[in-house]
Each structure stands twice: as C-alpha cells, then as structure tokens.
Image (cartoon, rainbow, N blue to C red; front, side):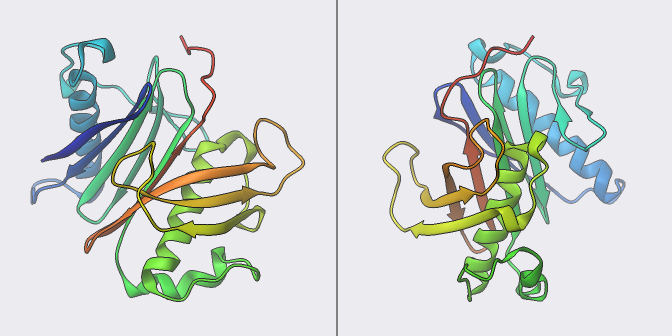
Amino acid sequence: MLVSIENIADDVLLGLWKMEEEPSLKVREKERKAVRELVAAMLNSDDSFGGQTKADYVEIGHEESGKPLLDGWHISISHTRGYVAVMLSKTREVGVDIEYVSERIKRIADRFLRADEHAESVNELLIHWCAKETIYKLYSEQDLTFQQMKVVDLKYGTSSQTRDCERLSFHVESASSDGVGASIEVFYRINADYVLTFAYSEEKQIDIK
C-alpha cells in the first residue's frame, strides 16, 4: 500500500510503501514486489518522471556489490519489517535507509559506533546506524567503513529545505575525493514503527543514459 511520494528536492523523489500480508509469498518475494510497485507509482506520479509505467515492467538489476540499478535513474532501496523505501533521481546520487524500531540495535552498537560518538537511546542508536547505511549507499563506490563515518551533531528541528524532517551533520573521513572527506547533511524521520534516513548529492551530476 502506498504511504507517500515526495519531491524532497529538485529532481529527487522519496517513496514509502507499507507491505501487506501475502501468505502466498516469501519475504524476499514480497519485498521485490513492493519495490516494483513503489517504483512504478513514483514514475507515474509526474509525467516528467516517466509517464505510465506498470509494476510488471519495472526491471531492477544489481551490481556485484549489491547496488541496485534502474535504467536511466540513480536509485536507492531499503526495506525493513513491513516497509519499503525508495529514492530516485535522474541527476543526483541518492541514499536511503529504513529500520524498524527495536531494542536489538543495542546488541550491535559496537559494530557501527565510534569511540567519539555518543548514542544511548534506541532512537539515537537507530539514527546513527541508518545514517551510516545511507552514506555508505550514497558513496557506494568508496566502499566506506563505519569507522570512517562520524555523526557530528543531531539537529532537532525541521529543515527549511526538506519538509517534516530533522537533520544530522555527518563527516566522512577519507583521503578520497568526490565529496568524501567533507561534511554531509543527512535527513531523518522517526515514528513508532521505524527510523528513516536519506541523503542526496547537492550538486547535480551528469545525466545517466
């Protein structure tokens, strides 16, 4: 079931889909179906984004690294218990992550928290985890480690650029170029069901063919 489709920035779409119970489908099959339906809905949301596209005709491939591919688009996909999130752009790199709220995040905190990061509550831990997953996807070619990513500051308050979102300042430590080594802004939303984080490149890239 479609939850929302938003133009969160120039040429950046964010979509959210709530998966319904389908006993005849395995979990992965249900996730793939939800992704295709969400992508089709996003492409159909505006004629400039592709016109009338049927979910059955949406073909999403993957690189060896697992990065999703959609002809003519930069795409990022994430799914968690009950939900699928997708970001699309023709000209910008994008990254999105969604994770259901659970105490289990405390058991793996030492996998992703740095010694100079502070997070105690479940929500704070989930924000750090999801934000780092988002940045990893945004800079997928860099193959970053969690220790190269640092949450600098959580900014509580609505962003003036992206509605109904809060922000965190992020720093990626690397000698690489292409924006890595600079500060990055990641947007996030929290509710009773999930934490959602997303980011996109500020500068438009060359259109992919």
